[in-house]
Image (tube, rainbow, N blue to C red; front, side):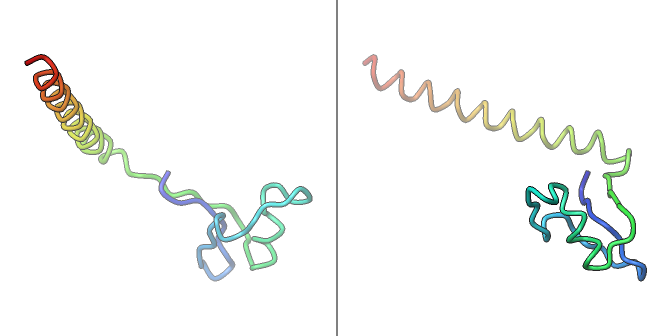
Length: 81
């Protein structure tokens, strides 16, 4: 999911993070309907974005892992001379 909230009658998007939930209204629906919210909406990434996102995330994690291995070898080499 990329965005969640409610749509107004004119099609304007209202976002859940703009309304604070309380004990009386835990989902903040009262706040959203007071601002003109009519129906819920949820935006998702399209299915065609799945593999490119997976590859980018994998690349980031591999780079961080390589950096951690490099740092570990530098520390170990310095301590065992």
